[in-house]
Length: 339
Image (cartoon, rainbow, N blue to C red; front, top):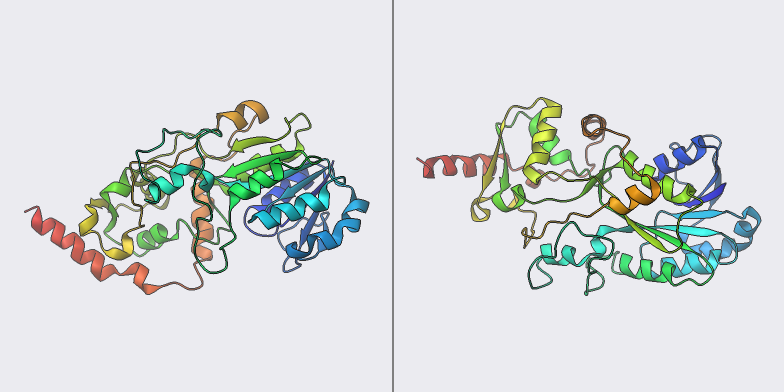
């Protein structure tokens, strides 16, 4: 099968492209040309900016991909562009979405009143009623709900939508595990977390397993048209249990201490307003329909992630995020108060 990947040189993209190429699919990546070090030698390339996608319509017509995997549709305009460009050219599109489309995301952030939505969240669980979840400069247009609606409404381009979890692993530019790894490597005697976050659950996914899910969605000829799938690990641990697993992988024997929110140093507060709302999804559909299962054990996933995080710390590390004197003072006060 001939498959075009839009984006594909950062984090999740390279393992997706590698899996496609290794399975014998003729794979071409459309990207800006900043790097190909993560792409297999046999993979083709078309250089261009995502914002100029329609200008390459004739190039794509000659390529005639059976499937287009869009790794980076961030806005309604992105989705409209890919639909207009590939309608009548490609057989199907796989669009990468996020589990932040669910109303539970706004509940946990305190932006939606009422009681928590039941979990695990299925593909039919309520979506956010409030659009544009991020107000930071440069991402005002970000809205995966509109991405999904646009690709699903395309009359001549069947769509598959994958809602991804919090992804960790080699290449993670958010360095999700780094704060814990650094504290453990620094020999901290204790890691402090809020009592509320300690019991909270959040669906995660190792990058190579998430890439495998995308690979299956792209290559399954029998996939139902206009189908949505949650992706992620089954039965996620609590946040405290997650830190404990990292500790075992590293061999750190310190203490994990849960504090009331009002006693937690401000730099350790993740700002979750309602941790009674777990952000956990049901992934049974993709497992039943596409035969998805994790290919990497949690132990191996953590080993690979820890090794990469140590070799690739954040470029702009803020010392305020590692205010060890404040953490020591909070721990000492807790022990003094407890007698």
